[in-house]
Amino acid sequence: MEPSSHKTGNYRWTICALVFFATTINYLDRQVLSLLKPYLEENGLFGTDPAHYESIYANIVIAFQLAFAFGMALVGGVIDKIGLKLGYALSLFAWSLASIAHAIVKGPFGFGVARAALGLPEAGNYPAGVKTIAEWFPKKERALATGVFISGTNIGAILAPVLVPLIAVTMGWQWAFILTGAVGFIWLIFWQIIYDSPQNKLAKGKLSQNEFELIRSDKEDAVTEESKKSFSWFKLLSYRQTWAFFIGKLLTDPVWWFFSFWLPAFLKEQYGLTGTQVSLPLVLVYTMTTIGSILGGWLPKYLIEKGMDTNKARKKAMFIYAFIPLTVLFVQYAGDFNMWYAVIIIGIAASAHQAWSANIFTTVSDMFPNRAVASVTGIGGMAGGIGGILIATSAGLLFDHYKAAGDIRIGYGIMFMICSSVYIIAWLIMHALVPKFKKINLDQDS
Image (tube, rainbow, N blue to C red; front, top):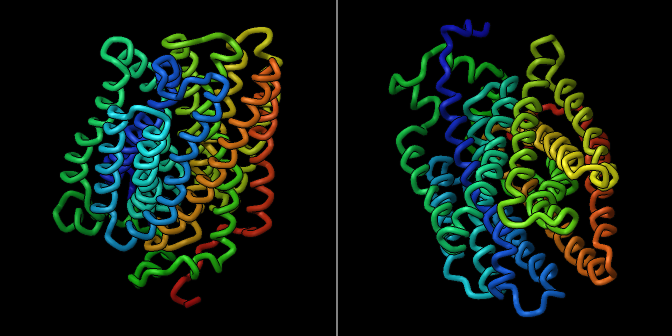
């Protein structure tokens, strides 16, 4: 029986708040470069030939994504081995230093190196975050908790267009990297003070017995967590469940990468917005995605509480979210009437992406025991990074080509067609590979 809600306690949501703020910092640091792109071009930091600025910027983005993909391949397994508390702290410390290091860069090569140094440790945020949620929340609450923590990306994206141009104008572009990077060191203090495992918090009297029992209420989790044996990538890649997550991330993560790195540029190219003018449209888009993140996690919880089993609730929610991005097909048509129609449509599609993400991340803890969650999340994150590299390369080439041809709108139109359709394809492939998100027993299959 689940303990009554008024006696259960809410310490698990304090832990979720920690992951939320880490994700906010993660995304704040990541967004700085895209917002400073016009300033860096004006200062000659992308070279001297404007005809190649888009490709140079794409290559810098790719340097981040290559390192991020490699980091995902590495960091998840490391976190599973050295432990969540230390692994998360090391990851955030390293990416904060890398963010600050951008301030001393003098050209395209230096920015590529700095972005790679940022991407490698930033990869630790999602494996660590998903593992934290799997450790601290029962299955029925995990999508909601995941939606809350990944909404940190949206808050970071809201803060970035407000703060970064202001800092760049008043203090110089270097300080935008320094000040945003330094925020991570404050988070580390709270992480060290507040975080521990549910068992240790229970033993220290910081967690109620009722809340502990709620966290451990999934019987299958209790059984599979008895063994502490770790598993290699080769073992994990032998499961269709791993490949379902891999392909789902490979196809859909690039959409978020594209909006993250090219939305300011789209607003400049199509509507002439520059500097602080892009702030309000970006704030609107990412405010909408915050709502999408949380509602995306709430829907399967609501369906489960109404009696639907976890698998059907997760699949149904993801199916709904997969259709919503089709609205992106009408972005440019609607934007011809009014720019804000285009901004709102992009906001709706980005919201659907975050709702999708809240659930696709949760499928890992639905299908795998906690000790493998960071590793599998890393595998999927690597796939998303590879997809991001492909979309950045394609976008750079397309935009340079159509800019030279005199109509960059065509390039954006092609990218919007891709972004609108991949979710349906991903859902169908995932459903074919794993008709039910049923937890596997790694010990029994060893």
